[in-house]
Image (cartoon, rainbow, N blue to C red; front, side, top):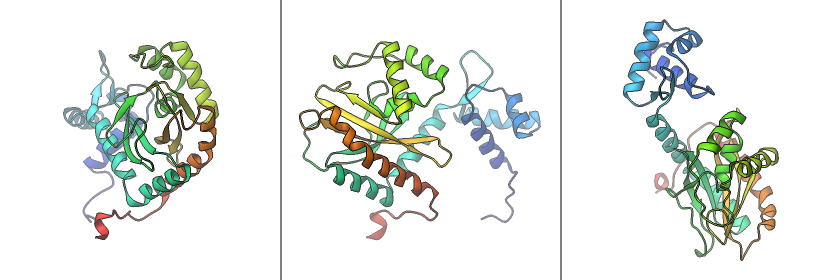
Length: 265
């Protein structure tokens, strides 16, 4: 640690601005940022400008208000993905996949799509494989449903009604009202299921992985051919997935760094 570093240096203030903007439910002005963080307005303007140049903040379309920038969204996704590929957390994923007997994956939301950052396969491929780096739509995947269900009501409805939706299968929910109803059920139940909505013949479910504050970090899910597990039988996966998600959440609280397999060689 640098002994000359202060908790109120330019970098600390920049991070404080990013944290503040990221936790707001709407775009904010420079004046609102300055007031909330007790910063002189010229200082706030200078830091915001630097962050905007780097793509970490951006102006909401047609306004002078700020939201998180695309560069920050991409960085956040990469950071979460890296965090979940540590040896300890991958072991949790391996254990739950072995218990369930099906492929399990960890997914996050990036740029209005679900991106899978880690997965464990326990059987020969017979279905859709959500390998790391693979992406899928929000509205017809269990992880995407959890993400949307946890949004504030107005943001959820706006997203559902503006999101481009393709009819991937006859079960894909493209009607906004039907999708909103499914998301409300997901919100109440605390987990999500998908019934051949993205790929015909494949069903799946997912549970949230939460930070200590209750913020959604990622989702833990399973995808399986309906010929092997019916949509109703997905209920049997819920308890082991919830337990594994809780273990993954607990690792966020634990101190010390994880060791990857490469580090032990």
